[in-house]
Image 1 (tube, one colour):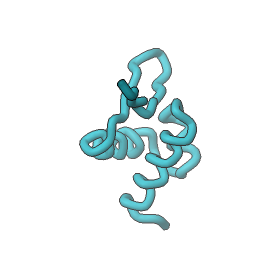
Image 2 (image 1 turned 180 degrees about the vertical axis):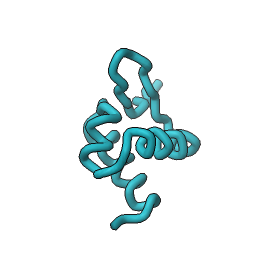
Image 3 (image 1 turned 90 degrees about the horizontal axis):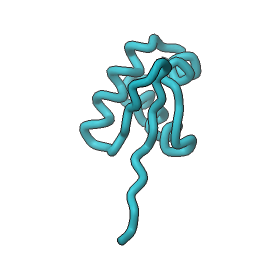
Length: 68
């Protein structure tokens, strides 16, 4: 069983690679509850620019930075 820190790192990598993902998909992929992924995203969003989009189904998007 992986630690919360390891899982959060893998969640961050998944979001960064895919750019958009549903919480339900991440929960299934990592074998945890939807609430666990929600907590992971909350923790990660304190240090990383993660945008959640409240719609009928929840997507997560890595924030894209633009060069000016």
